[in-house]
Image (cartoon, rainbow, N blue to C red):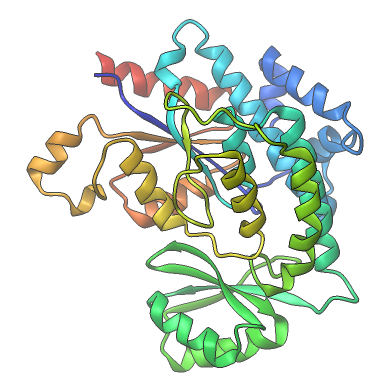
Length: 348
C-alpha cells in the first residue's frame, strides 16, 4: 500500500534571508513560479526581498506574507516537477497551513490558483499591517508553556476578552496569547502567579488572531468576496481535503472557503486539532503515541507529514503534538531528495 502524504504549510516566523534561492537556481518550475509572481502588480520586490533582505523589511507583515507564500508555491512546483513520472507518490490526501499557510494549502489542493493566492495574501498582509500601526493600539503576543487551555481561557476572561485572546493552540504544552500590550503585561503577572513553566514574549509587530485584527478582518471581507467568486474550488471527493485553522474541520464548499479565511484573521489557530483531523482524513484514528499495538498495526504505513515551504517551524509544532509523527520538509532540492529516499525506503 502506498504511503499517504499530508502537506502542511508555514506561516509568519518561518522566513529567513535566502529562502527559496536554491529552488530558483535548480528547478525550472520553481523559477517560473517566482518569475510570474514578480510580474504581478505590487509584488516585483519579492524575489530580492527573499534573497537579500534586509531582515527588517522582510519581517514586516505586508512583505513577509507574500514572501513566505511565494516560497511555498515554488516548493510545490519543484516537488511536482521532481515527481512528474510518479505523481501519485506525492499526491496529498489532506493539506493544512498554519495561519498564513492556509492559503498555500488551498493552492496545493486546487481550491485557489496562483494569482488568487498571491493577491489574497498581498492584501491580507497590507490590511493586517495597517491594523497594527497607529492610530490603532499597540499589540503583542506571548507563548505560554505548562498551563492547560482551560486555565488560560480563565486568565483571558479575567483580563478581558476584548483586550486579549487565545491566538494559537499549537499543542497542549504551547499556547499563544495575543492582544493589547497592556493586557499582555497584566496576563504575564497572572501567568506567573499560576505557575506557568515559561512565558516567552514573541518578536511580532501585531496582535495576530485577536480582537485587534477586527479592522483587518472587516477590510478583507470585500477582498475575499471579490477574488473567491462562486464556484471557486472543485471540492470533489477525489480532491485533497483542506482542514481549516478556525474550525479544525475540512472545507467542503466555496462558501466555507470564504467563511473560514475571513474568520481565521481573528479566531485562534487550532493547530493541534487540525493535525488530529489531518490524520483522521488519512485514515488514522488517533495520535500514534496514544495507540495500542493493534491500532498502530491497522494504521500502517503511517502517513508522512511533509512541510512544504520555508523552514522547519511547522514540523517542530507537529513534533510538539506527538514526537512519533514522522515529518520531513521540502524547502530546497535537498529536501526533495530526502523525500524521495523516504518514499523509496518505504516501498522497498
